[in-house]
Image 1: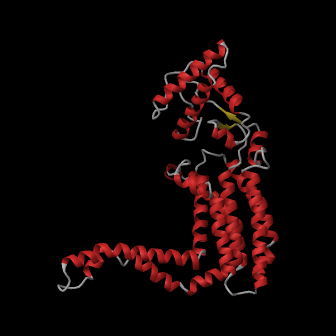
Image 2: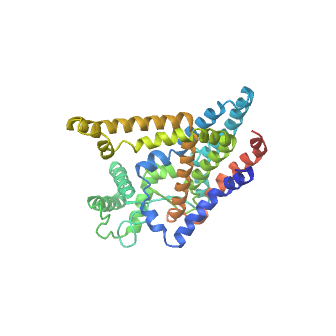
Image 3: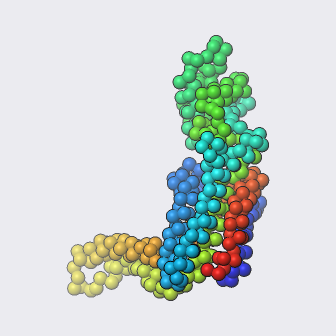
Length: 379
């Protein structure tokens, strides 16, 4: 692939993915995809939210592994690694200050944007009808967890109120208890004066747990981050990871793919072994009457799983050690899929918030890789 085409892909793949998500929604195909989203699921918690770790792990293993291919001098390898580290350090610092924190005790840029545009940590637990506000949290699980946390805080500080506040405290605790006793429905008997109860809960949580000035603090203490412009952290992170992987792939991609192509038949052979150990197929190959039934059962039912496990281990070791570019490409597809799902799930963020997250990632990655484009083409 020519550098011109690769540059076009590098520049346009993330915006095109976001646009594809919007088109899927516009034509009515987004509902099935939205049903698969679970922000509290194991995949999202251990994989997506730790995405920069996995991207760093796979990306750096590829950088080191393919620099070891004898295609340049030792000085050239050190230069490549140093340049990759410089780009990675810039992107890591930008990821941290945008999503984690500018400094100790200082909110990240995305939260500062939210607060300065009127955002706040809300505790609008009950709606005007007296039921649990459907917009209070993103899911039933998060709503239950938030209500339990609020209940614990109110119970802990229940003795610190005057007579008027004591009445609000009693009504707040009773209302939350009613909801927690019917967690599946998340409906309580109609709560009167829900606005005053919401205001009381809000004041108490900010008094005892505040100041809640970051999205992480707000989420940790059961609040709802709403009211301002909230740049999409998922879009930002997915875009940053894709740009990093594609940018570094430009450095070693030709060597990696040439090495993969040279050993393609070995990989095909290892892959076919995984499908050559089925019990029915093995039973038919066990021979004629010279083999006893017990021996045929052993060979058909016991040996195939062991052979399949050995073949899978061999294939995994070959990909991880000799062809990690396969892992990089798989990770790249995964992040693009997550970016697509984020664009489809329009109820979490507005279009403007998606675009601001996308733009924030492009501000730095575009500068980093555009500046080094000439040097990268010469490597």
